[in-house]
Image (tube, rainbow, N blue to C red; front, side, top):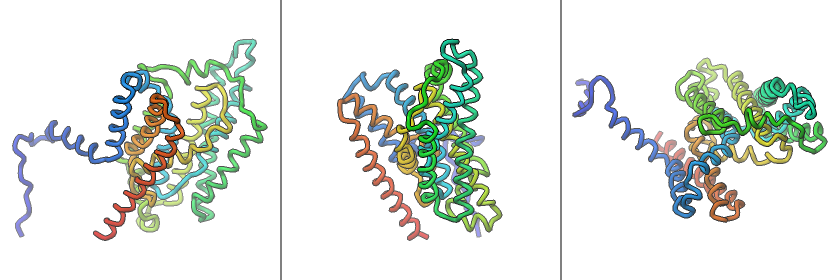
Length: 351
């Protein structure tokens, strides 16, 4: 049988792909993603409607700033959903972590009358504590899910109440205040190359997480477990350990998001994150991940995060009640799930 030989492409350098072809392929990949197109259309629509009030550098910087916390939560949620799991407790883990971190910072930083003499050490310790506490919650979730063999959405629905309840017990239902203002100047509002530091933190973590998911064995294992956990186990993948790591990673990112939130506002927000889990899940699903696991990307998730961020900002600028954002995101989420279901059925029929 004569082997099929690829037809040479005229004008393409044999030593590597032609730059123009690579650019065209990249553009085609982006435009084939309807979610990315939706984001572009949304930006253009608000730019036409509001003009320079919306389309300016300061406003885009503000959009990125407001989306940075959600980005961290969504990255962790993407890993979990791709791995076939779900965490409804991320908002409560965020709140509990930031409450503990805020308490530690207040205790270590010193008094306001003395100018918070230990502010630097307190802030550094608070960052470590927040991430560690969040990771511990994630580890707890992962152990419960894998050992009890109970669906993750049920386990994390329970720990959602536990985390928020414990935070309220510790604070007696009030927010932690009295944090050193150095948190704002050194982290919360600090500008690096024209962008707030939290934006850089969220962006770097998203890029690294995306590369790990797409280019490493850990990422391949995550997809394999989400697609077929039993098949992954039979192929030698330590499924239980991997799932626990995914939950721990999710918790650590929730803790980081919590302390960055404190750094921005110099107070905890015990009752301000009740919808964080739904926003993060919506971003991941809107970004193209499958609720059934095994499919999704961090890039798609990032686009899914930016859609509600742009929508909320634009609605405020054009004087539309921001409550309509919830309606729009709900509609987009339903469409995204419907599209995913249609694709899945086509794949099943084709196989």
